[in-house]
Length: 145
Image (cartoon, rainbow, N blue to C red; front, side, top):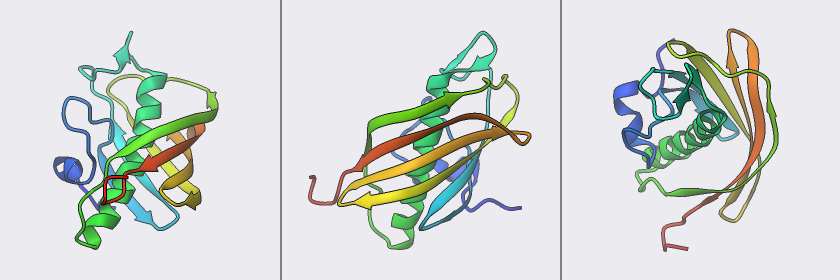
């Protein structure tokens, strides 16, 4: 399957830039969520002892949500907004992925109220859940509020 956004274009849709890009491709998206893929390089800033850290997995979920919003904004020809993680809850960590492996991340939008979005995120590898959580993300709206 050809991704919606390739690795070389992902930074057009998220506010993060190298070396802090923790999402590779945006594979699919709709108004209810998105799916991304990410190859974990051994030189990644959030790799320790040969594994992608919990912080890396959480950032991957957040950047998947950002890519979803960024793609929707690009379709509407409006600037990609900044987002801030307001809270992370219900974190369940099962396993940390090794370097030189690929993960798949799914986010589902549960609620949107004003500029705050509640998502559920899950990262999987080869059909096994690595981590799941909920995040409240505040998106900066155009007038800077």
